[in-house]
Image: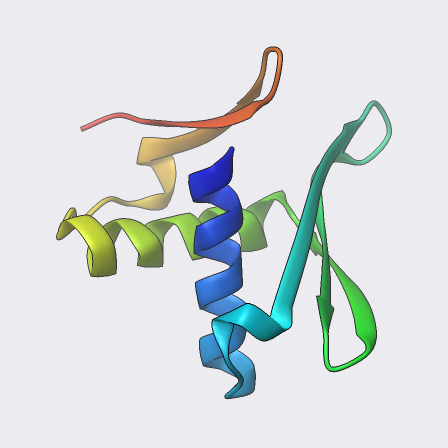
Length: 88
């Protein structure tokens, strides 16, 4: 779960041109909406849906681990916490 949060923080900081430390993320899962991330930057809140979260994870895999993964290689799961499973 921590690496998913790191991935989203890095992704949002890069997109908005701000420091990673200026981004806060809270992950959640609900029956109606599935996986979401609430992101706070510059005093504002926005929600990311699962596809946005996976986009951030894919970029993180490439930048931090030099792993080239594709959308169909990543899925989010809920056990005791939210995890990303990467096949490939």
